[in-house]
Every structure is written in structure tokens, then in C-alpha cells.
Length: 89
Image (cartoon, rainbow, N blue to C red; front, side, top):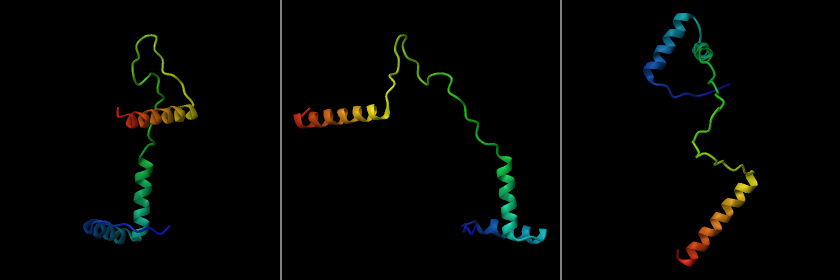
């Protein structure tokens, strides 16, 4: 895949010299460097949430709502706000 990068002049010069010394092309040098860099990085560990991000008082729960119920609540809240504005509240 053809790609264009804007690299600092000193880095580009060093990369070209390194490629010539190795007897390879700049393209191969960059591809190898990227492969090594990406191979050394382990994928981020995803952690499963095992406790609530907030503490609720005993006996309180967070209500479970569907997306359509949430949208309906937002619409009601927006309409209440509009009514308040028109009533001068």
C-alpha cells in the first residue's frame, strides 16, 4: 500500500543511511521496523468489571432501561425544559 509520511529530516537521513548499510530499501527498513514494534506490543488487557463503579446506599439499585426507554426519558426531559423556558422558570 502506498502511503506518505511527513518525517523529521534528521530521522529520514538516518533511516536512508541505515537502509544503505544493510543493503536494503528504505521501504523494507520501515516495514521491518513496524513489524518489530507491533510484535513487541501486547494487546491491551481488557478487564471485566467485577464491582459497580459507584457505591450506592443499601437498598438502592440502578434501574435497567432499554435504549428506547432512555430516548423517551430524554424527550420528556427536553419537553419539560422547553415548557419551563416558555413559562419563564
